[in-house]
Length: 248
Image 1 (cartoon, rainbow, N blue to C red):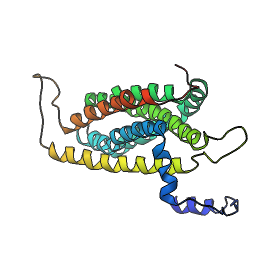
Image 2 (image 1 turned 30 degrees about the horizontal axis):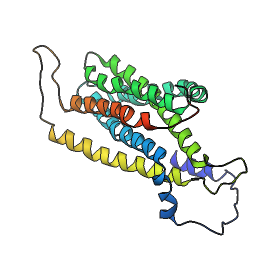
Image 3 (image 1 turned 90 degrees about the horizontal axis):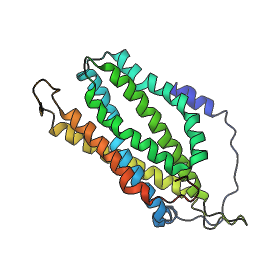
Image 4 (image 1 turned 60 degrees about the vertical axis):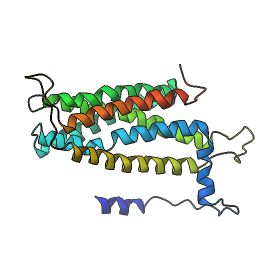
């Protein structure tokens, strides 16, 4: 399938562009978004959410196989098939919501929804695998809303300085895309290292708060911590994000 992807891409027409006479250096171009205070608040949000969310996918898969004892096919159904169906259903809904409400309200709603989804993984076990199917689908549906809003915000910031005369001298251009990709990648790398360290450190830890209740393990610590970080992303950064056309 990877080879087919490459082969079909060769069929996409290449639109030639005239070379630009004055091309800013890479670092000079990428410094421009870092001077934009509104973008920095947005960057803090996406970095925190990426740090909290992305590395959890691997641990959710391990958790489903280790604690819930799901088979390979059931894990794929829970973690991949049903979430992709959910994404297919909600994608146009999030798109219309972004057009009507704005991107900032969309981020608030979707991210707040991801907070209980993260913590609720603590309640999935061998006898309650149905919880995992619901959470995996709901989590992907909400994350789709975040991605829709994120993409649109970066696109707007890239060309938001264009005035009525068409002057693009103040436009951030693709530098916003580049910086956003770097920040997302760095947050994912640091998140992977941090969650891996926590998992290794607490690999033998367990605690039963009340006799007869579920025994908490390192998985539960990570699920709760991820939920709290998602809440922090909303509370600390989104109030500072400025979007004049957004609904209250």
